[in-house]
Image 1 (spheres, helix red, strand yellow):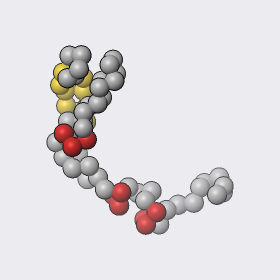
Image 2: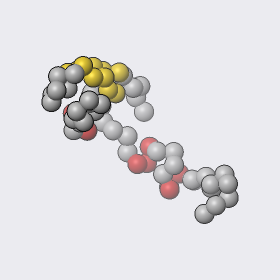
Image 3: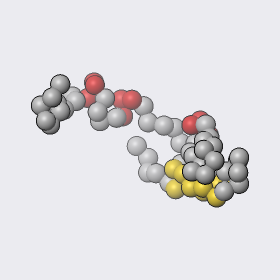
Image 4: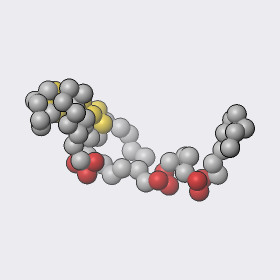
Amino acid sequence: MSALQITETECRQCGTLIAGLNGRYACPLCGWVNSHADGHAALPTAEDDPDHPGKGRRRNPLGRR
């Protein structure tokens, strides 16, 4: 996985300066969210998730199912 980069832009709906990760933004004032495809890097796949079922998932530490 590549390193995360903090990026800034103006909200396209209300103009507030907002920060995001790798070009993905959500405005806390008006609720605007840009498309995930607008980001600067590809999103990780499900297989990249350490909790993905195919990765030898750990059991619940409390023993519950």
